[in-house]
Image 1: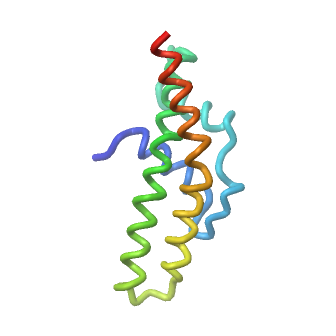
Image 2: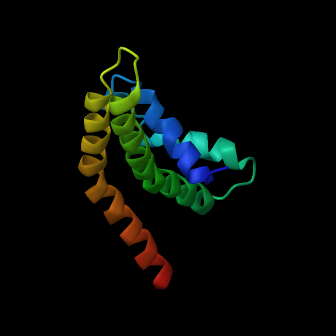
Amino acid sequence: YSYRGFDIGNHFVEYAGFECEWARYPDEARRRAFCAEYLGEGASDAEVDALVLEAEALSLSTHQFWGVWAALQSTMSTLDFDYKAYANDRWAEYFRRKPAVVAQVEMFLASKQS
């Protein structure tokens, strides 16, 4: 079991594949459509917005999770795969996206306190 936001965020990140082609990450319209479908008929725009943000925030955790996993695999796996490079790619994307995602979360939280 994991949080729905983690699973959905990971789903979006997986568009990039093992090649870490981050340009494949789904755009906002596609992420919103996915989240609206996930929530089902009758979901409000606010509910969809909240789930999109939840997935975005927890997508950062997926980079941490898979980055650590790949670093460990680089020391143990006998498969012909550059786990070290994959770990570096995941952590680089985490640090690249973190400021924007944190800013989105902070704006969301501030709007809830008004």
